[in-house]
Amino acid sequence: MITAALYFAFACFGLGLLICMWRLLVGPDSADRILALDTMVINVIALLVLYGILEGTAMYFEAALLVAMVGFVSTVAYCRFVLRGDIIE
Image 1 (cartoon, one colour):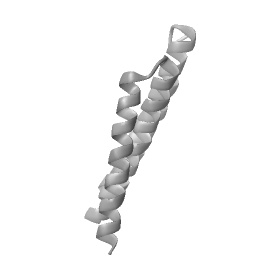
Image 2: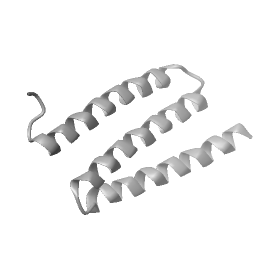
Image 3: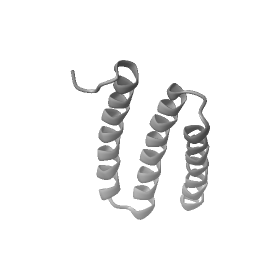
Image 4: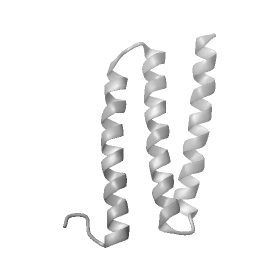
């Protein structure tokens, strides 16, 4: 039963990833693209955690933590670049 729930969650988060990819490519302005990119990072984290549960190993949880840290820093850097024109002051 847990396997079916995991596959359903994979499908849902995969669909969410595709929808965010569409918003990233078609978004009318840069704020929509930044938000889509941040949401894609969250979906990738969820997919990594789900795959770690499916495989029963902790390695994917550590990878999810690394993706979360890199995703946060990249979102902040991209926002600062859009707002100020530079990343490092």
